[in-house]
Length: 114
Length: 120
Image (cartoon, rainbow over all chains, first blue to last red; front, side):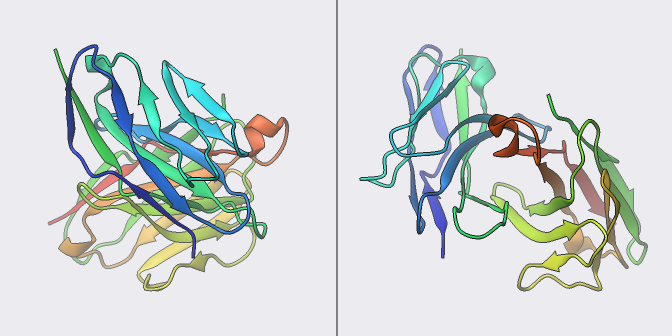
């Protein structure tokens, strides 16, 4: 079945460092891909998304490109801030059937130090 | 933007009691809602899909009689943890997919802020 694999954390960076969180997926057809962020004590918020191959999702300085050839959707940010400290989840929604189910990766904790 | 409200945000109860968690879509209708459970430092585990006007669809391994789901209207789904025990302590999150309007809205899910359940 469909699945998402993302790098384990925690990832600890200094402010203004470059961030990459790897995410790869297994799915049939053409899934939609998402990154969600969960700040401490809060629910999940959509960070960015891409719905087809080569699409680049971007928001708040974060970017991720849908790479079908490598089945990847890595999250990047050029210069992280302390306020980016959170748990980041990669997720996919399958293209087959009418379901809106999301399949999540295990989440990656990012801790940014001043 | 679309808002999903979840209530309560935190509940403490005694072992053996039942707890009801509400999930509301505030500015859109949701014929389907999803209930997740999140263990500390782990990902979200889909428990069930709540369907307005019909029975919920439970994921494998989730006890239907333990986690009762009711989706009585297009804006409200409830999850009742019956006869709660300490092992039911967890973070429960609901979500609702955008179902109409722009493609950007329809293709994503909106999450509640979650309910932390602590069973003593």
